[in-house]
Length: 330
Image (cartoon, rainbow, N blue to C red; front, side, top):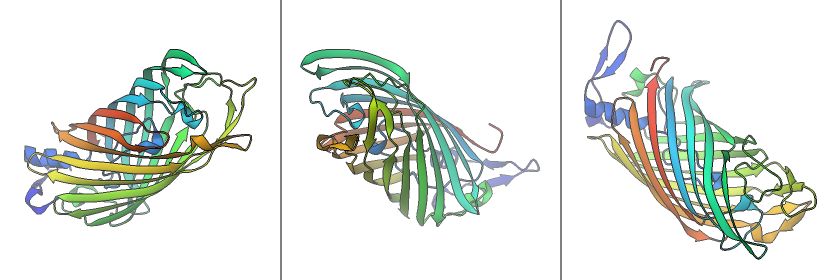
């Protein structure tokens, strides 16, 4: 936090820390607004994902995501002219802790999808409605440089400079999946994404970015259009992401310009590659975080495709409500 917005602290016998100014409370709360989980994992835009928070920070987030555009079909069939309009509410829980003296956090997210899809498949116009659970996602992040684990009273006076962190995101195959259906909410395989992230602050400006790659296990039974289900594999997907954000300390807002680029992900059946499934795309968007109470905040985000070879040709709007607190008590 900047010097002009540092709060006045009152340390009471009950060992509770209070922030005396409502503007300061809002500014501090904005630090506790965390990134969203997104339905299409390689295409996510998550500003400030590597900023640290005080130990024992907690947050519950309800996110509504709206998607409108082309459908990826889990990277298998690059059909043209097939579109979907779908909604993905997400329930997430965040907790910050100390890991060998470094600031660390874990986030678990459970999405649910509802949508309509239509297009031409095998020369026939088709439409379908889908509703069901998506795959559970868990992300573990730890700071490697610039951010030791700190209690709230120490964090209040700390000023960010450079941060270097690492994370591991795991997607478990818990979502709805039918091997004979072309459109599924689940991917029926494990996915892992190791990542390195960097964040640099200059006054009210923050520049952050990350580089990572998705790795997938085999889907043991993909059966759409086949006499019997067969294993499906996918090569790794590399991703780069960058954000430039600005703080408005008097009101606790921050806004960011977001962009990413990803490539790879060629699919194969029984080691027979499908070259047309290889992805090469990018997206551009923006995010606005709005604290409105001591423990609560809203976040609004929008993104659209800028270059698409295959995958990611859709518009996305996200609105999230978050309740955050420090310690065991709400």
